[in-house]
Length: 76
View (cartoon, rainbow, N blue to C red):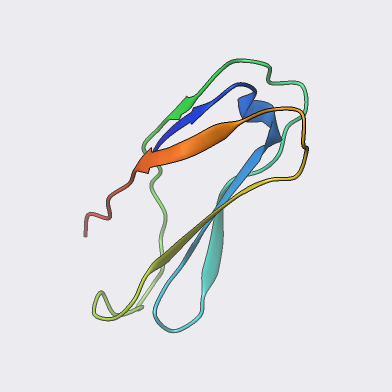
C-alpha cells in the first residue's frame, strides 16, 4: 500500500475479500504524525477465494490533512 498523506495517524485501512470478510490493516492512531504510508501487510483470510472483487477501503476521519492513494496490490 502506498499512500501520500500529511499525517498518517489519521488513516484507517481495511481490506475486504469477495465473500465480504473484512480485515483491518491499519487503525487510526492519532499520535503517529509521520507523513505517508508505504507498507506491506500480511493478512490471513483463511479459505477465502482469491477469485472475485477485493476492496481496499482507506479513510481519513479528520479534515485538516490531505492525501491520496497512490497504488496497492494483492499477492496470494
